[in-house]
Amino acid sequence: MEQQEQARSYFSHWADDWQSKAAGRFKEFNIIEARNNAVLDVIARKTKVADFLDIGCGTGQLAIDVAKLGICSEGIDFAPEMIRIAAANNAKEKAAATFVCNSFFETKYSDATYDVLSALGFIEYISLDQLETFLSSCSRALRLGGALALGSRNRLFNIVSLNAFTSMELALGTLERLTEEAIILRTSGPENLFLRMAGHERIDPQPSSHPTTGIGVDIRYQFSPADLVKRGRRHGFIPHAIYPIHFHG
Image (tube, rainbow, N blue to C red; front, side, top):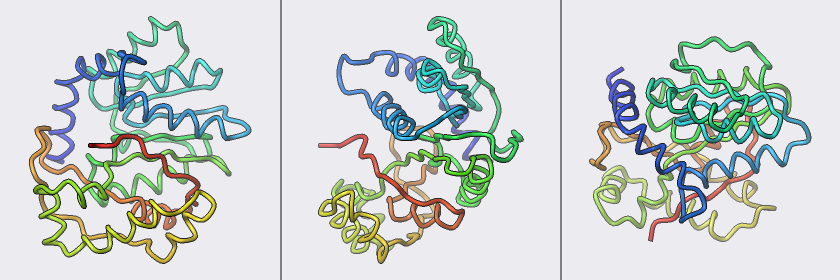
């Protein structure tokens, strides 16, 4: 699809920049490191993790960190330059992660193979039909009690960005529902978040096009937590936690 070809071209072109950002750990806030830490927390909360797969692994830092925990760790990305750098990072760190250059949708995975799957910064670049296929494939690939750490550009930010994205939501008629969800997230504790969200889980209409962001991919989907929770439930997933990774001013 044109969307994925644009994404492949973009990430191949910017692989060195991604590596620079990912490698600059602990010097300042690093969104890649913050996303990776969320997945590491998911892993730490489980009693046993033997097999892990990072989908859209980029330059490989997460898969490498997981491998250092003694876990069989794999990464897959369809951008060749990303995988080249990931392999070099793996060798430099003397880690045992393995990396594959291929599309997730063209790779066959056996059922009940992994304890944890992660996909951060991935679902923005696939179609809505592919997202359903992706969730179904992840459900089958996970062992009983396994976890999927799923990251997304948070659509709730459009409420307060006060730009073309806000105008887009206004035209779609979604601002009120997104605001109600944001209030629930802001005023709930971890003990009652999903209970309160239950009456607000929904799938909002997606726009046919998105405002330009400076990234050379015409369609970059956004999802609110409630949207993803409902999509996940349709494939047997039960929500456990929401990690806020990055805040704009």
